[in-house]
Image 1: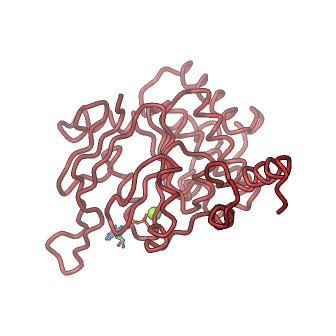
Image 2 (image 1 turned 135 degrees about the vertical axis):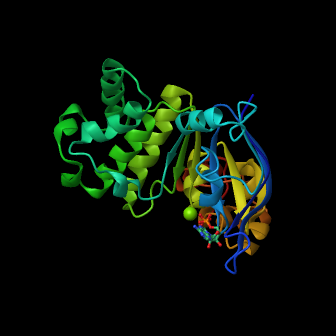
Length: 287
Ligand SMILES: Nc1ncnc2c1ncn2[C@@H]1O[C@H](COP(=O)(O)OP(=O)(O)O)[C@@H](O)[C@H]1O
Ligand SMILES: [Mg+2]
């Protein structure tokens, strides 16, 4: 079942002015329930503009966004509902933390949904755990936390709305490698536990390969590719023309394959590469 369908979506900023810019041009695709989609694309390709349509924050210049088959811009009511059904976490979300305590910050979304106190409390406790922090954090000021912790609290605040679709715009931007791995692992676990659909914007092709079930490639405001990781990443040359590089490890193994080594499938991560080398050695190949 498609949880989200985008139909002929076009978005023009500043229409009719001298600074008119077509950010999205006739984009169409369907996302199935439970999928983890990685949106990749060069800076300025329209990724952020695209995802801000998913919860009605931006309105299409033309085209439609369907949530469970229903146009979210059809009425005021469906538009408001989409705000809660699609949880959008902006890039650098920690800049939007403003409450006195971490607990209150996470509770902000659920409060807006007019849930009762008990339900809010339950969700806050669950979500602080989802992001790998313990209860002792709830009484702290968000401003006393490290950068990585702030980011996790901000993500917990969106998770607490229990959205059908969790959308994250570059959730690991500006984090060190360890912080990045932690955030990705938490997102992976969240999806496993909740079965939610997750959409992640990322400029790291390796991270998307590691995490996502499907990749959507944006190029100059258009959907250039959408498919499984294998389908998309096998078009390395085409991706290169869009300013995207498949992971170096993938290139190395593609070249080895061309040289005649019987490489199994495609290799996207260092771990997969190591396992493949071990397998080849066991089969008697010298590398
Ligand atoms: N608020 C805005 N006003 C005018 N143009 C914008 C605005 N936001 C983005 N753009 C333009 O729209 C295009 C797509 O931007 P964006 O969606 O931010 O891309 P990405 O997230 O892939 O970097 C770019 O050309 C950008 O300059
Ligand atoms: Mg962006």
